[in-house]
Image (cartoon, rainbow, N blue to C red; front, side, top):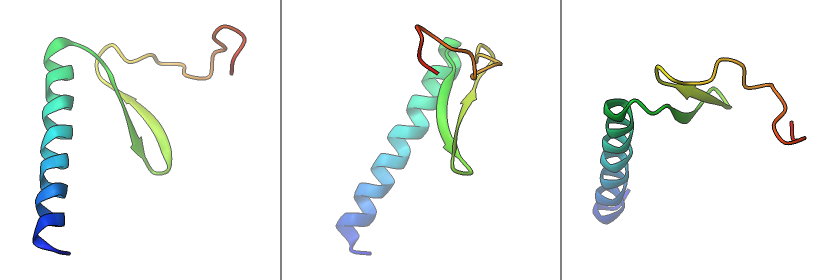
Length: 57
């Protein structure tokens, strides 16, 4: 990996971590990707994500 690519990756990781921390402090849930599936994290995250909303599943 080139030094510029590594700097870009480091920057993106820091921005993502800072954003998740900000959402946590504000009490907002976040959607992340884990094990090939979306995962809702946070105290206010909906429990049942399989419910239909506006006719969309």
